[in-house]
Length: 213
Image 1: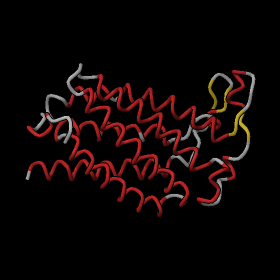
Image 2: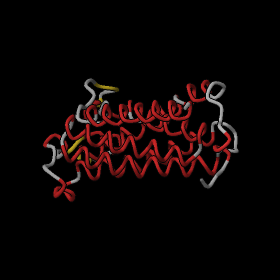
Image 3: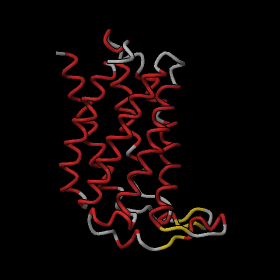
Image 4: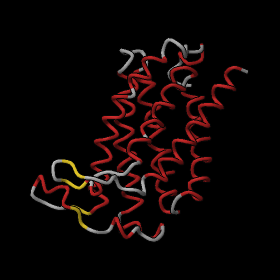
């Protein structure tokens, strides 16, 4: 009963993160930083999505990879269904694909490192998962080559000067991807703090010890 209650909470938290991120990724961050327009660099979704890795890693640590995958799949179905209502269809498709692959990779990496120093598994899993997730999401959501998935967002087609620091330009969706990845990495590192704090509260269950379940 306790395991069911916890996994239900994890699944609901995951769905909330996915839906919020799918909605917020449609809104660039306003303002400037050292003369660079943040709207050409970041979307608000970059600040919320790393919490998905925190939910996955806490589930994996407490209940093992088998239960963690269940939470990921529940979050996937609920998140995509609700995202079809809260965001553009192409965003929902791209997010669902990137989320599922990125989170399953995170589980695999975490599982291989779970017996190492406490921070290595969540950090490695979130960084590798974020890199793959970001690449898949922004490619599918905004790249013209995937236009068959739905209408491209007009604001993602133009060119952005964000890579001007390297004396070049890039499509706006590509600069968003690079900016979002940097933020996801930073947020992922910061989220090691709540992960470490919750380690003493969310004790691993016996089934969490296996590396192959």
